[in-house]
Image 1 (cartoon, one colour):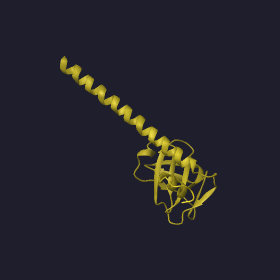
Image 2: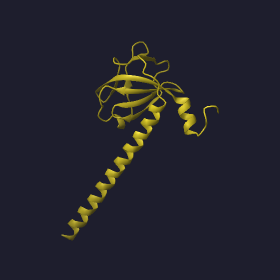
Image 3: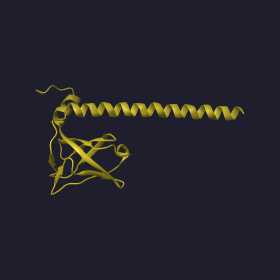
Image 4: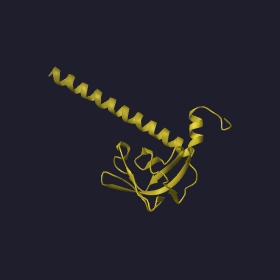
Length: 138
């Protein structure tokens, strides 16, 4: 009986630790999203993928930032949350002749199709300056 109580207490401790970790992860993701939103401009109808997708980062189930060059970043808002987006290793982005259109093109992964609702360019140079603690004049 004592062993069962010890095992139960251990399981509860692990579960509580996992909840705290999930909450911390979500708080970090929310802070990162807020930073990108701070530097995101007005929505645009389309963007050109001159060099393709360099890398990307999921910020929420319906938000991600994509990089298409050294300082070319775009905040994408998806039409609806995409289950598991934050845990994917790779994604695809549709385009027509190298142009990604809001409300037409989509993000795909693991047989999911997530339509892009809004595209906002990110002033990534300004974001990097803030991270490094530099003023805009530097």
